[in-house]
Each structure stands twice: as C-alpha cells, then as structure tokens.
Image (cartoon, rainbow, N blue to C red; front, side):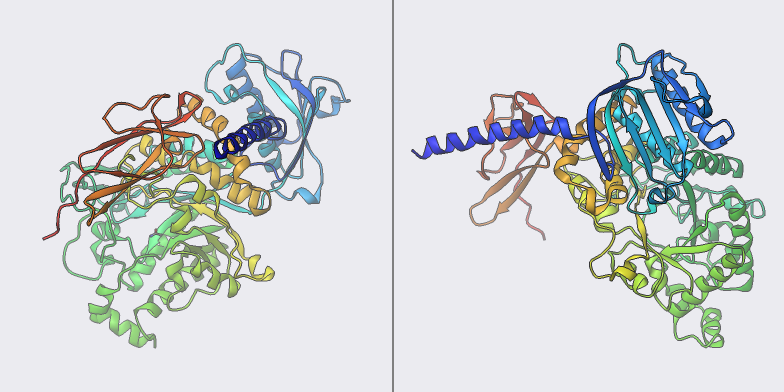
Length: 625
Ligand code: ACM
C-alpha cells in the first residue's frame, strides 16, 4: 500500500516535472540577466545572407554598435551583413534595426527588443540601451555566436519575442585586485567583455596594495620601480610559512591604463580606480619612506593580511597624494575615485609623537577622527576637481566625509548607516559578494581564501535592505562583487572564481528582486555554461559536484556523512574506492561510516555524470595537544 502510494507520487512528480520542463522550454528565455519584461511570440527570425542591418550613420555610437554586431556575426558565420542608413528602413523583411528613440521609461540603459519572423527592432533612449539589446540578441542566438572563430553548420535563428528591459540598479559592479597578483591587459579586456555580456557597468580596479603598487605615476617613478615588486610570495595557504623566493611584480603604464579605460568605455563600462589610503600603503612607503611613520626601512610585503605601515599625515604626504590623484584623474574620467580607507591599523599613529601632536593641534579626539580628517581632506581636493570619493565602510569611523559614498563590505551595517545619513552606497558584503570565497567543499576546490559562497547564495542577495525606508533606499546605487587575488595567481584561477557566480550577480543587480527567480535561473544556467565553454573560460562546474560533509562522532567513533548536492539530480556513491557509475547506490540519507572508509560521490541526471566525482576518506581527528 505504502509503496504503491509512493510510486504514484513519484510518477506524478515525474510527469509534473516533465511538464514543467516542457513549459519551461516554451516560456524561458535563455537570457542572463533575465529581462524585466518579456513575452515569447510565434516563430523565429533567421539571420542569413539576406539580412541587412540598419543604423543612422549620423549617430556614431549607434553605428559603432551595429558594426560590433556585424563583426561578431562575420567572425562566427563568415557572413558580412551590410549596414544601411536607418532612413532606408521601411519595414522590409530581413532587417535588424538599431534605433534611438526618446522613451523615458527606458532611462539611460534600458531597451526594447522586438523579434518577429520579419525583423529585429532594437530601440533605446541612449546608445547604452542598444548595446545591451545587442547582448540580449547574442544570448537569443545559438550559443556559438559568442565564439571567437567560425562556428560551422549553425542556423542563426532568434526566437520571436518582445522584450522591455530596464536595470534595477545603476551601479552594477565587479572588482579586480591587481595588487596581490597582477592581471595582464589582455585578461582585463576579457574580464570587461564578460562584464558587458552580463550587463555590468562598473569595473572597480584595485591598483595599489601592500604587495604591489600597480599604476605608473610619472612624478613618482619609484612607486613602480620599487613598489611594483616584491622579493618573494607566500606559497599555499596562510600558515604554511613557505615562500617561493621569486621576485614578483609588474605594473600598468599610463598608456595601458588609458587603453583599458577606452576599451571599457566602448562597452559602456566605467572604470573606477582605487588608490588605497591611509592603509594598505606598504608598497608606497617602501618606495618613498618619508610617507611612513617610522624610521625603519620597509619592503613591499610578501604575504597576505593587514599591515602596519600606513601613510603619515605630513603636509608633504598630502601633496604626494594630491599629485598622484591628479595623474589618476587624468587617466580615469569616472565621477567616483575609490580611496580605499579599509583596514588601516592605527598602531603607528598611536606610537608616533608627530601624529599625536597633529591630533591635538587639530583638536581631534583620536586616531579615528584623524582618519576622518585625512579622508575629508582628500575628499575636498577631489570635489574641487569635480570628482566624488567612494571608500570602504571604515570611512564611517570617526565621521563620514560630507559627500562620500560608502562601499559596504563588512556586512550591510555600514551601507545602512550611510544611506540613513543620505550618503550614496554600493553594497558589497563579504557574506554574499566576495568571489574570492570558496564555492564548494574546500577539500575539492582549488586553493582559495576560504569561506563558502555557493551560486545560490550570491543569487539570494538583495542590495536594498528592508531596514531602509523608500526614501533612504534611493541612496543604494547598487552592488558589486569583489575579486581579491591573494590566492588567485593565474588567469585560470581568477576565471574559476568569477564564472558562473557573475551570472547570479547579473540578475541581482540588473533583473532585481522583482524579476529574478532561482528556479528559472537554474534552467538557464546550463546554456550559460555552454557559452563559457565556447569562449574558453575556465568556469567552475562546482554546482554539479557533490559535497561530502563528514562529522566525527567522538562517542561512537564513527562519522556521520552527508552528501550534499548544490544542484538537482540523483546522488550516487560508493564506499569501496570504485568510481560511482549510473548503477551505484543512490544516496537517500546520512550514512554512518568507520574511519578509513573512502566515499566517492557524483551527481547524475539519468545515467550521465553531471560534474566531477568527489572523494573523501574518513580520518579520525588527531587529539590536539
Ligand atoms: C576589504 O575586503 N578589505 C575591503
């Protein structure tokens, strides 16, 4: 009786999920971030040798977007689609139209995209909207369209659809730490390409660190001659105490930085440079010791963490920082300049007679107020040049500079306090948006800083906290994910941490709370991974792996082992060291296992293994002395 009821329930579930999948195929767009409104139509538009692109030759940016589309299609299909003047478009068939048209509802970045069997009409208020319409179009086409080479035997069809798409937030950011490990210009361009494909618009470029100063400053050549290099680098995880003994370093010339700014601009991305102060300044102090607080010589740091050598507050140091910022502003036209402000230990300021004298003479209470004085001075300088500062949430301590925006990383509290105080905020909490954190079982993942940030947790993030009133919520500009690179020395290691979590971020900041939907996202992820694959990105497949979580039971002298999949599917496992196959045991409940047992597990859909096999041998914890 019980069994037959179970059977009926499972049959019903199978039928239900089959229907679910069928209707999903009909109603899901394979677009990430999911557009805010869409309705599928009947039939397809086919891009073939009859297709003609239309754009207004007088509108340079629109023409450029049409040319980008033309170039990409030529790359993958070999077809060179002509671009004709928009004025010639009279509702002909085979037309792909890029058109600017005033429509307040679409704002600066939104767009309409109408696909019918006869035409594709992309319409926007601003060129950025047309650029995003083109990104959506790429995702409506077969995934091969994103390749960098000819993809043979593909029908370039686009499903009929009506889309109106407007981003939820205006700051849709991704950060890259080039201080701990430097990224090549080519890698940064690839990063920007991917940001654009995910409709992100702000690249936060972390340029100075204890372990390396990465931007050429012409007035202070030692910043890069000395500060861009370190003698050695920590090997493996913190605590190994091992160093590789190899000189490491490099920097971006101003010409390269300008090239990146221009490349980003072409993709509607603003580059926000970060010059850290007063902390994370060891490389600068190593280059120019007069910027520091002690007489002891300092070297560019070779390990990770927070370090004591912060800037002093001499007038000459402010002159130095202003000179640096003048060169920075000349390269980076962004409204915001990030001045860091995080993790500045006050020990040297506490111990310095000159600093204590300064605190007294300025009538300040303590070192926190001195930091606030420091940041406010820099803010005044940048404001006088028409720029705004943004800093990590520590800039709230000792009093927030009057016009500063806050990047909230130690949770959301800093962001909430700043928004309540009418300051602009970018949410970037470590809990949900630190892409340097692990995304699976630490035993199975490549070396990383730790933590656990699976795809679903990124997806669940909501940039506007409930604690804010509607009026206060207006100060939340958006959110961004951060990629700190202590443990990410190669392009591959960095890509692994970013993809596919960038897809979840895209829906958090573009689709927004109202339109994102985890169940729908899950159905769209496989095709997104296919796109990553076609672009040779070293994306993580961790969502398809089974995490093995074992807990030792001291009394019973055994382990309770839970097999945890992040994704749907059937978990199969073995206990005899053999590789799980489609006929291995199906995991149903936690297992009690003895020390020495090796569990191997994999996630299966039908008979196919989804990710990789994970494996763990139960080892009795050694008593601590
Ligand atoms: C930070 O992660 N120190 C901003």
